[in-house]
Image (cartoon, rainbow, N blue to C red; front, top):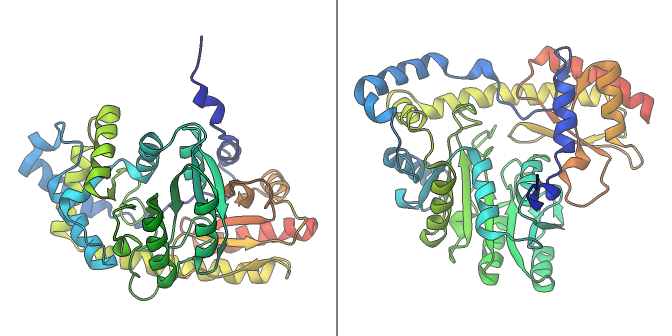
Amino acid sequence: MKFAKRLEWCDSSDVGDILKALSDPEILSLAGGLPAPELFPVEEVKTATALVLDREGDKALQYSSAQGDPRLREMVARRMTDKYGTPAKAEEVLITNGSQQALDMAGKVFLEEGSVVLCESPTYLGALGAFRTYGAEFVEVETDSDGMIIEDLERKLKEIDDVRLVYVNPDFQNPTGIDWSVERRKAFAEVVGRYGVAAIEDNPYGELRFEGPCPPSIKSFDRDGVVISLGSFSKIFSPGMRVAWMIAAPEILSKFGDMKQNAILCSSTLHQAQIVAYNEMFDLDAHVERICKVYKKRMSVLIDSVREFFPKEAVVVPPAGGLFAWVELPEGVNARDVFKVAVEEHKVAFVPGGAFFAEPGHENYMRLNFSNVPEDRLKEGIRRLGAVLSQSM
């Protein structure tokens, strides 16, 4: 039996090790990027579903277009325009099965074996996996607390042949929690436009902002039609529905639409209709505001606990939103070794930071999730990790 060469490019060992550890029900997990299930709007979804089935049950249970429910696309376009200044129209929106499907399709549309993808350092683990499946080679671009350093981005665009894609996660980045400055967003859009290279702005966390309005999206500064903006209902509504979207110029969107139709025909007609009905009957913004209040409090508990229980050499910066806190440990401390001891001896898990870098090294980091753990368990989990770190440092 012969398998495709692309399987050689897939390395799921980091994810596999974490999932194996989490299969133990006794593990206190600060690892996964999961929304809090107790905040899911279960009763409201029941009501919205009843409306859908009464009003349009025959259509909601049928196949639908690959581009997605026109009502949902209009809702997304309006929401993105209002919140991020993204000048979107419904015809520029494609519904996807989670943002992860959009990343997979980007690999199909843009990448071949040896194609170069520029990314932040560190970057989203799921993007590394999605693009490696299509033979991508990654080059990290220097990043600081304001986002990707534009001078390094431009230098690499000048020096490297066959850059097919630039991937960024500018709003409460996974894993660091960094929130790009408006100046960096604007400069990024100008540079990728000038070089004519496709750029993906992946934004599943932007609405989980603890204070103030959302900043303008990178897409809002896109004058050359090269930026592809991704968003999702997974973190603000329901990850199980797998409803997300992309906004792009028509010539790009049509190619993604073809890839989607060939792969899955369409997204769930029912789940799209449920979100439309929910938005008609209830206040999605109020729901997101409730989520943010809970997550902000949990973030504060986690940060305070890190400062109480971790060795003083550990550095953590409170994020202004999102799901994660990023901890820098002293050079020489290997978070993968810490993970093994933490899981086996202390029944607590996190994600070792080295998994988020495209290039080897960088093992002295850890990503901690605060959204899916009650406050008392957060403090206990950090206490356990602090005990492990005290032995390791």
